[in-house]
Length: 127
Image 1 (cartoon, rainbow, N blue to C red):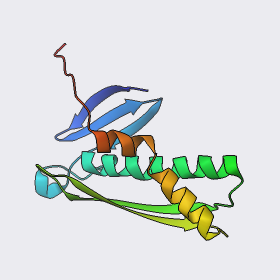
Image 2: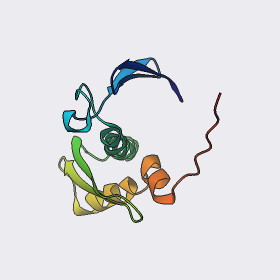
Image 3: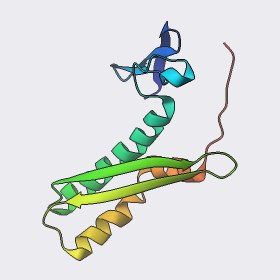
Image 4: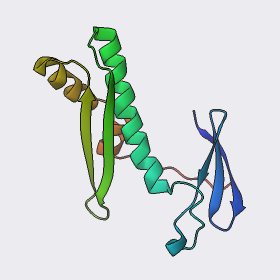
C-alpha cells in the first residue's frame, strides 16, 4: 500500500497516512526537530526488523515450528558510498538447531531485506 499523504504538523514534524494508520516522523532536537516521532532512518530500520520477524513467524506457523517470538535488532552502521546495516536475530521458543537454521535462512528472504540488498531506482515526479 503506498503512503497516502504526508502533512506537515510543525517545523520538521510530519504526519504520514498509510493503510489507514497515522504515523509521525520527526528528527532530533539537535537536528532542529522536536523529536515527536521516529526519524526516517528509524522507520527504515523498523521496516527491516518487522519484515524479518513477520516473515519468520509466517514460515514457522506454516511449517509447525514452535517459534514463540523473535527479537530483531537492526542498526544502520555505515551510510554513504558503502552502506552497512547490522541485523541481530534472537529466536524464542523450544527450537531444534535445524529449525533455528531454517528460520535464519528464511530471514534472509524477507521482502524488505531483498529490496535493501538489491537497491531500487526511485522515479520522482513533481505534481
